[in-house]
Amino acid sequence: MPLPFVCHSEVDVLIIGAGPAGLMCANALANARVNVRIVDQKAVKLTTGEGDGITPRTTEVLQSYGLAERLLRESCQLHLASFYNPSATGGIELTDRIASVTAPSARYPFEAALHQGAIQDIFIDSMTPLGVEVQRSTIPTSIELSKDENELVDPTSYPVRVVLQRLDKSEDEPQEEIVHAKFVVGCDGAHSWVRKQVDITMDGEQSDSIWGVVDMVTPDTDFPDVRNKALIHSNHGSVIFVPREQDRIRIYIQLKDKDVINPMTGRVDKEKMGPEQILETAQKSIVPYKLTRKSEFIWWTIYSVGQRVASKYSINNRVFIAGDACHTHSPKAGQGMNASINDSHNLAWKIALVIRGWADMPLLSTYESERRQYALDLIAFDKMWSTLCCDKPLTEQNGDGVSPDHFLKTFQTDFTSGIGVHYQPSVVVNDRNQELASGLVLGKRVPPYKFMRAADAWPFELQDLLPSDFLFKLLVFTEKSFLNRYAMHGTSRFDIITISKGRKQTFNIFLLPALLRSHWSKVFIDDTDPTGRFGGEGYSYYGVGAEGAVVAVRPDGYVGAIAPLDHVEDLDAYFASFMKIPA
Ligand SMILES: Cc1cc2nc3c(=O)[nH]c(=O)nc-3n(C[C@H](O)[C@H](O)[C@H](O)COP(=O)(O)OP(=O)(O)OC[C@H]3O[C@@H](n4cnc5c(N)ncnc54)[C@H](O)[C@@H]3O)c2cc1C
Image 1 (cartoon, rainbow, N blue to C red):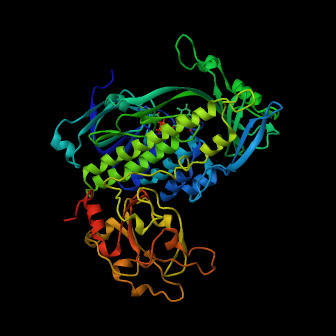
Image 2: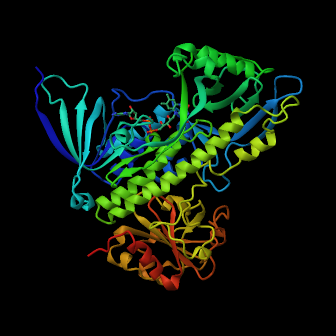
Image 3: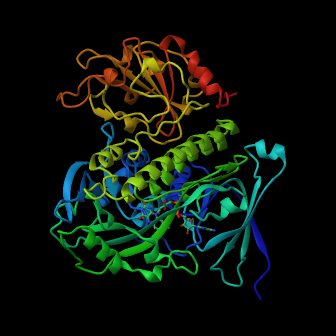
């Protein structure tokens, strides 16, 4: 007889689901020293397949957690995208080659392709030394949110009660655990149990687009773009090639309903098609080029996706959903994993600040306003892009088809690189004083630029001075003094980085007011390094004039507010709208 006893526990944040969204959230919160737990129904971690493309912005985000180096070491970099269209003589022909992503301001202006299991390992290996591990073979069986208003608005209370069940416990261990959590984040994928339990609906429709995907070792081929991202529009359908790590490639093909849908159930039937048929369809679509498999397939799947967005991202700012639980779309724009990682990047610092008692609960509402709008924009883009990918190409017989030019222009958006994400005005994105720093756009991420460290002439990348360490950064473009009551009360909540217009030959760090040089490593000058190769002209790049400016950068690297040096009260008002004033 199993023992009927249960155990109780408390945790600040319980994350359900250890895919990219859940692991990103757990790792970020572990870094912030938040008491966090993460559970997953699967007994073992993912080793192959699923998503594989990391966009330039996501690589910048990973760098802010110190994780980009490993990604770049293990992944395949995609620098060029090629476009093929039907040729006049039958088959396909090359029509263009351009940058694989349109992100001229990106620090890493390329996509990084690596299988999802390896990307998830990067997070797992980062958080393990911080004492957070995925508790596997574990599912929630019930979730209840307190109805007590006082409890819900009190950030120190534990108003969410989740019953967890271990699927792998022996009979003499407790089968159930009741977890009392301050916050729960449902990162449990497209069929999210959490979302259904809290009655959040998905808006949108099931797409009619079904894709076959196969991962394999680079085949024997004379197709010249097999190691570039290749987007092929053929009279046999659309094909996408994605070069991958360790001499692998991924091939996506678009499938017809009749080939994969079971007429009895109306659902995708994996028995109806296998990797051989996916490869055969790709082979037909790239004639006159040849493609011959060299070894076993590594992974394959068939999947259909809805283009849908959750109607809400949270219940009372206590139970959140993130990642595929909130939005699903086609793989054509390569955004699934990226959107999921960036949802958690947006949410984690907000939860951490509330748990630390630094920010008020309403800050958490900006997670939904910022990330849901992004998902709506993504679905709109995905619909347009999917139509272009799936429609027949322009030919003599098909005058209404998609022209290569139109296809190319749509591809060249900064939206898919993630760099174009632009959060709208809210309590954490002010809309004043943009003219003081026109290159640091309110609501967008801080673009990379090199400045020279004043004390020792090291050239530094500004983004490296903005790590995801849960602190706001104040970039002070000045040589004068300035005061801020939050900074005065405890600089531990802010990192003040001074960027002076001085010259390396004459600059004296000790002539700056003490507040602007909390440590010698925090002062930079807008001058070239001694070799003349890096830096200089940073004021001009960021659109900052001689009058200077103070720029508040959010913990996630987005520009939150800008103030004139002689009116820093503007920053006081900004922070007062969501931060608690220290006693
Ligand atoms: C079969 C498949 C193929 C895909 N192929 C591609 C592709 O080719 N290209 C692309 O860009 N994207 C692809 N995707 C999408 C991409 O993988 C997702 O966008 C991305 O993984 C979303 O991350 P996530 O963390 O939100 O969700 P997921 O990665 O789905 O992670 C959810 C996690 O929650 C766990 N879980 C679910 N329910 C429970 C529960 N009740 N209790 C505990 N744990 C639970 C799951 O085991 C899983 O580990 C694919 C997805 C799938 C499922």
